[in-house]
Image 1: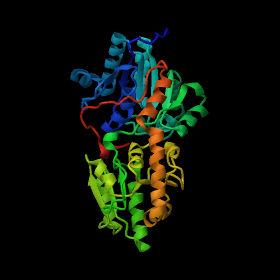
Image 2: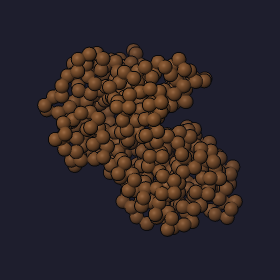
Image 3: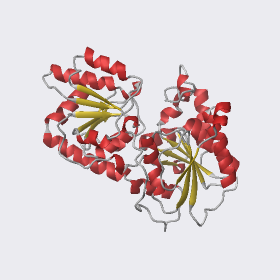
Image 4: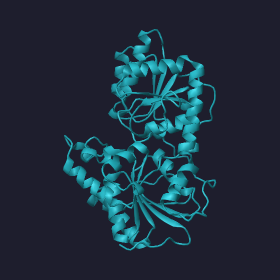
Length: 398
């Protein structure tokens, strides 16, 4: 299909996605920091807090009731694409949004970018290990479904990944290296604390949804292991989710209930970061955790599982500590070293902050997007962006 040349008044971008507010700001702020972007139109289930430069379109309720939310957003996205003729349509997560972006792009002639924010699990084995409500119900891997999903991915003009691991997985499936680019989530200043001396309320904090793949239970077991060694480590866990009650029960069963504080959903995420010197992420799998980046930029020393794109920013022994998924004793050893050795922790924290700022600063991510979306080179990057309203959602960090 014939592609249109760029407008002289700047790019117009149509975005289709279901985002929590952390993800929304982290992915849209870099677009808004590019002078050459005239407008971002967001097709969403509900209106977020206003962001300058973003126009939100919500599908009519009758469409959602009649067809379901995913199809309703597809219909609205297709209508807007044909009527407004955007330069780019961006779909974050493959099903349904990457698929929706592809269909709307074919109908309108716009270029399509699919952003693989959940890592290769979005398509690997047909998505059976993903968080997708439909594909995640598959009882076992399906290569037939995987082939169908990758067929959609191959038809996107650009595929963006959160890091190099996700990119390499796509290249192994035969995608054109020139069309697969790394675009991490950006740091949001509204969630980032200024570095300071380690807080005294908690030794370690974790922020994220209380769901199985985050493996918060491993943190509880590590705290119990350290107590048995004679080290009482104070842990704060911010976030909510379906495992909240189970995790509280497990803390009691492990006899560490007095050392673990379940903080629930927290708006004041900066205060959480300021309350400790170490951030822990024991997840089974990740794309690239926004909460991890925020913590590193806030001056916390990270300890995380060696999975996905985490390895782009956490370099073992340099800008953090990595351990294997499920290795509770390895987690406990790393926590003991970070908490017990102030010089080591401060050195790791300083390196982690520099790594996060260089990898995921708004200006850095905006430059990646500018180059990817073929914005003319004379357009400036890193202008002071303005966002109205504080829509940070620390408890829902990915």
